[in-house]
Amino acid sequence: MKFIEDGDKSEKMTLDRFDRSILSVLAEDGRISITDLAKRIGLSKSPTQARLRRLEEAGVIIGYRALLDPIQLGLDHVAFVEVRLTDTRQAALTAFNQAVARVPEIEQAHMIAGNFDYLLKVRTRDMTAYRRFLGDTISGLPHVANTSTYVAMEAVKETMLSDTT
Image (tube, rainbow, N blue to C red; front, top):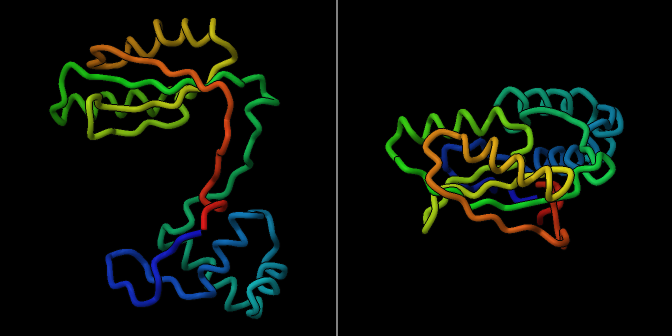
């Protein structure tokens, strides 16, 4: 996991080696007990708990959740969708962003600097469900001019933040 080093004076919180260790361990096992976490990072329970609380309050740790296997849930069709908007003024971007946030099939949405405005990662059951979703939902999002779809044949690498170095 990459973090801001002790000497970095940016606006982000400075993390020392214990903070980085806490984050690395939690990224692998978010259900670890404080006692086990303290042992893993080499501190006693009280300072570990205080550091964890500080990381949560500072917004470095934004939550804990279960990671679900979409394949086991029958959602193995992944498409990447380039979206071009009819309007890129702030009000239009805000309307698009808010609408996208409400659509569970859209796993990721990124504003892009390039030949299109957004790149969406969409997960559905199959091609038929995706085709319906594209026509009914994506095309109906605010200010959508046109789209281009790229279907993933195989996930070669999918990582969470915990898997990076």
